[in-house]
Length: 480
Ligand code: NAD
Image 1 (spheres, rainbow, N blue to C red):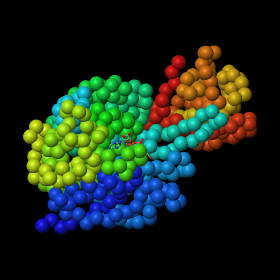
Image 2: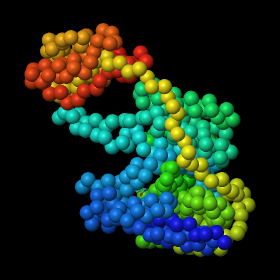
Image 3: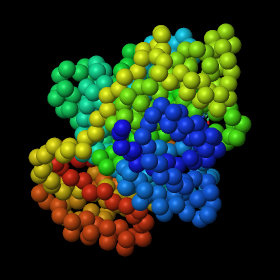
Image 4: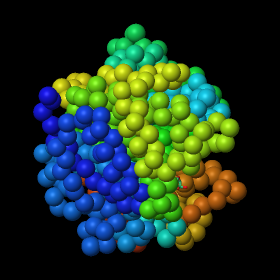
């Protein structure tokens, strides 16, 4: 008999306790060998004054077991409460969020009978770094951070996943026609890594048209990899397209810890009524069982679930008269699955499992360290005392040494020199000082410039240094 594997379990809020209870019951009936450590997270913990929603023992338990099966959590509105999910993913380095969305046609109603996609969402970077600032009366900023090692790791994971699961294509979605440096890096790394996997087809779509194609014909996609925000949005879209948000599971993969959960939330409106569909959490538990080396149990649970779906025994969210046979509650649905343990589906593809890949021995590629040369500075000002040409005249008079005022923009649009009267301006100005050639500027020139700006009584809210990396500008150009 397999030794029990220690796992951490949190029931969560809303429908969490009822779906977790039946999921644990089904796994046990299928022969899963689990030593369960139960921890408290969620609403009650938040309301007890713990801002991250986790009792102190949660970290200790997850770091001991390395595996976390988590119910959905209600994040209270306002009050500075931090999302349990975002905190766990980032603190424990769970860099990949794997979200499969599959159609169960003709047993679950969907407009996309052939859909079978896996979205691999980057989990730690992008706009989710949580670095936001209010800079002026009118303007707020959120920093989008894309790193080379972070991009390399998630993209390699997507190709490794495709290989492990016999999938034929990986598609990358980015917006690098606009964000040429950040999304441009993700695209460039995708091309580099794709070249190492000649057995797997690769393609790239700009995210807007890629999202439209995913919604219209998801069957043309296989594995998709994308930065955090696009992945967050599109994985919910994909789940809904496949039939119901209640069907989709996710695995958060790290080198040390892994967390499994349904993609849906705590659905407070149906909580406590025996109406919730436990399938998303059950399919997450199936992924967990393969991950902890119990793939036979995973397949037994998954096949029994597929047979239950085929037999038309459906919870209310997927029940459609004429397609479904019995509209059942959470516990009856779970009983039906238990009765079918050992059965296999007749029409739907039977489940068999490869373990989820991990990249525990992965090291970022050694990249040549570029020669970095300071060329200038973008100074951001909070200013509302006149026209762009007034500001241009003032800032021109502050030039000294190699730093020459080149351009002023407002929300990225050039307003000086030769701006348009029609351009709407806020109180947030980016003023670019550049040297005519490399090698002339050092940090002292920037400090001297900032001092002159201060003496003039201007409010500089931040600066960004402008560098060349091996002669290539590491900053976006200003057009117009
Ligand atoms: P939700 O996913 O809880 O509910 C959206 C809709 O889907 C509702 O109509 C709900 O009844 C239905 N639904 C969701 N899961 C279902 C299931 N298993 N069976 C049947 N129907 C189901 O999203 P929401 O209402 O936006 O959020 C509710 C709370 O959950 C919020 O506090 C939110 O912050 C939290 N949330 C938590 C997580 C998580 O812990 N991973 C994820 C998303 C939202």
